[in-house]
Image (cartoon, rainbow, N blue to C red):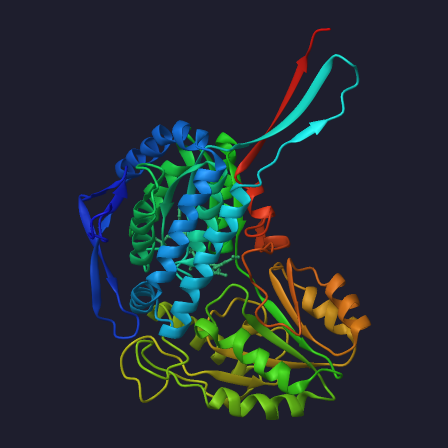
Length: 481
Ligand code: NAP
């Protein structure tokens, strides 16, 4: 059983100190939370070697047994959702209820991929001659380097290590420097669930460069799976090409949220709140830009304004708080810059538009609603990653499709309409990997999640989520008689 350290490196089934440490802080208060071991490139190499040594036995472990470990891990996560959620809130900022929800969502990836571990079938291929038997086997790709962001400190981890371990791969995980504690808690719990030493190693660091380089260059690492910014994703893809490592990328988005004239306006306003203000707007699939048909724009704003105004902002550990802090001061500054750019270009602030005056410390920004947004504003083109809803108007379906599909991103899009034909037409023409039709929360473990265009490569979740960690081997056998 893992001891309860939780702040050291986790390599080869044991906590290990590093040469230095770095401070993890609470974004709601700015106060230090923990000193965490700071992995070096040498530590990364040790973790990779441990994963490589563990690979033969783990990949030979029957899928049924790997599934049992994942199911026990799921059960432990759910059993400890309150304490895991609290750590997540303290380091990541999201309100406790949301954090517990993320723990349950994260655990669902273990459950789903446990099932997939039991169903990793190959294929019998019809031969061209009577004396041959042709088979395609599915085998684990090998050691996986997984790099995760801070905005979902639990779910982005399990969405990667769940399928990797289910497939029979071993893992070296580098969590985000702001939120390593949740990742360390999860791996400790997996050890309790029966995961053998070396199968999943966790190496937090405050300087991702050297650790990233080791993951990219070490020949034993056969796969890089990354969630984070498009800029870092492109860098990893370029560098991984040198040794032709497999790459999966879940990158940034800029989701359009379209409200047609025939939509249920109250449902659209409720959906806007969920999609835009969850995690204070720091999700890759959150609505970034609202396109509302001109004939219902006033009604939509009338419905949405009181809902935004009613959101309670504050320290996520306090009762009743719905919107927590942003992850750091750079995050707040980016939101301020986007709002300034929008208002100087003619947008009107209906709610918010500044840091909340009553919160004097921590990285807070008030839930903000802007009217009169235009497509040239930064908030309509770049990921704001904050609680800002800019509303623009449109006149026709063709126009809104063109505007929604403009730009390099293609992760998630939302549309609200009660016209079934329109729903199909628009959903099929949106150049996005995920489309929510009258649904602001489409993500579930059993469905494929990922982006078109510069929003990513490959899919996580669903049956597709296993493909990323499996190679196909073709075996042709000549038989006698
Ligand atoms: P980020 O800066 O790209 O960081 C993501 C991860 O990459 C962190 O662990 C980071 O380490 C690491 N990293 C940074 N530079 C690296 C390098 N040179 N080599 C190896 N690793 C490196 O992104 P973020 O700001 O944390 O996350 C927000 C972004 O993630 C947004 O764009 C959001 O849309 C995207 N996101 C996408 C999805 C999706 O599924 N498509 C889901 C969630 C988030 P450090 O923490 O040490 O910097």
